[in-house]
Image: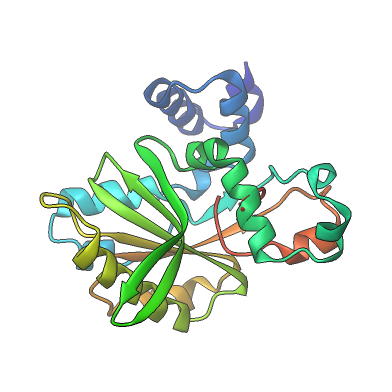
Length: 233
């Protein structure tokens, strides 16, 4: 009944029925995915997967796995203390995501396992930190997510590309596929994102997130980079 009430075409209904079966969604999980409008966002991510991934089948899987927009509606303002409410920043959002990691992972779909946040990498004598690191069993790849407040900038991909190089050299296990990167930001010009990812050799994509309208304006304005990320760190 949820699917019938909230969809407008047979194709859309078939999509949610199939996804519910594949992912074993509860009725509550189904409602979340309907609310996020998965049908219209799945496979629309600006990316370079087809050029950067040697296995075309894996590239198609990766394209279908990610969305161009994620609904991050799980930040509970009441759970933030007064200090946080006065000084909400990206780290608070990241913490919020980590606290709600199960829901965040479910937004991405099957096969995702959370490895850690602020994942430490050492290159030379300097240390760097990946905002969120996952592993996906479907494509046997590490997935690095960088959260960014505000609008997408092409320079973000240079940082992410560097992290992917380090992950492949230092963290990836024998037999695993190259790491994939995702920049999650508040908004992005799709054409700019498509141009920006085109010539990188590491597989990367650019996604945005939105929040529910009933969130306080100050909280909405403070939300950073990823998706799936409202109760993050």
